[in-house]
Length: 115
Length: 114
Image 1 (tube, each protein chain N blue to C red):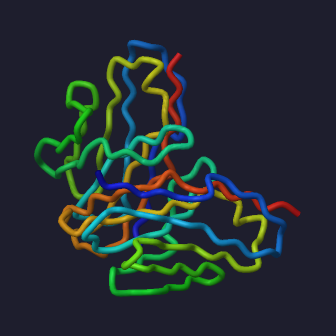
Image 2 (cartoon, helix red, strand yellow; image 1 turned 180 degrees about the vertical axis):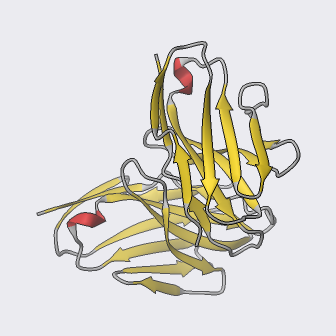
């Protein structure tokens, strides 16, 4: 199993500012993902963080708004840029190894409130 | 569109009682179906993973079943405890998504009271 440390666990930010969320895995993993979870709703995939190259974004999410870095196989960051109250949500990091039936592990999430 | 629908949306039971949560999905073909437990303020934690050829899988007091013909799954919790209070999320992995993309249900919020 993999243990994922995600920080900060929560933050309250002013609109127009940016927040960078960090995700550290205790072992090397093939794939890392970033999700957003609105209260009472499903997890929505923002992007796949690719090691050493640009992230792959899902429909509705763009690099300028959610820049992602993944410098190595154990670490990734997600930045929420130019925040508005609509960005208030829980952001989750996930890690897994390649393979259809492999386990997916999640960080504890970052609860973001934009005021 | 791939969908994972869960019911009920929320549930309250007394400690010690059993309960069953339902999941209907339209994802097809799929590689596996997973159940996760998400405590408030925490990330999801895996309970079970079943491939399309498996019918049931247990993890302690949690037993998941899968009927690939009707595209239904259930999670049965036996002898519930206060610590079982959480959101339970059904997740399906599409077969063509070798990149491990997952389709999440909205979850069932379970509250166990004494």
